[in-house]
Image (tube, rainbow, N blue to C red; front, side, top):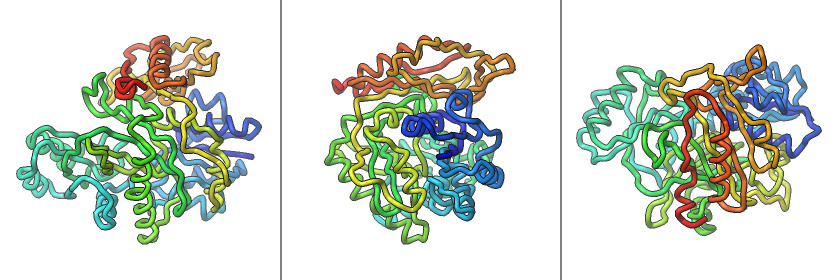
Length: 429
């Protein structure tokens, strides 16, 4: 079997690791990959959003399965193009990927089909947005409608902050095309939960839920990031809550996309807010595995995921009897970020990883912004550099193990949180 994983971040390294674990004798490729994926696959230079080049790479290497990691190539139509070439691909069409690539589309879809979500209005004109903000209760949220690498949502305590955020996106163009349309939303309070469903567009299986830590600083302080860590499982995700999420959110959205003529095949990520009363509401949808959630979920899946992804990519459904919904133990992923992240990450620092860190198998180092220089030394090349995932019987034990391993990795300006999983630990898990 020949498999191509598209992308070069921590999520793609984790996917590659999981697929390789399921089929160690298969041949793997990663485009473009990173220093970590090169240990499991042949890295292919290129841009994931270059649909023609990725398709040519898959065809030339006679791959049997393409797994698309990031959202941007899906929004660019990579899955559509590969389908025309009759190359089995796990990932939704561009039309279905609008669930992430256009938050305005997703919001309209949810309102139309009565999926619980925050009330919102969309705007392309700053004057209209600021008038609406002027009468909106505080706090409130300003979001870029397009793809903004996880940095397009600004939680604003005051209307003044919201006006500043709207101006930055609509007038200054701080987020480029992603911010050409914005949403102004009500602020939802509660506890966040990441729920990922593997689906063929009709059937679906919910993976063990995770919780992401978006803020840069400990105690959930500082700016929003693409994610500073995640843990799995999450105590609040009871069987009753997951049934409610399936009935009120996942199933209606899949049906809505079918009605829209955009059946969804791939991983549907629902970023949820769980209120104090236990009611789930959608904050956002993503059209792929979460990052860093994938680095915490994949290591604790009880069964292999490769046959599921391949069957869905080929138009089928998961094998009978396979169970993906219950975590085998616990995992905590701590992200190590570059100096200056998220606004202006500095690149080039040399990274030192103790060679024995992964020796026992309970610590996994997933690479994201890394590359080897001409002398073979590991260097920082991105904002989020590594995800240090540890597994253990409990979240508390996995968190301690992940934190200890993170402390042993060195590069100048390293930033990381030492409190990943703190809510679960406080619950005594």
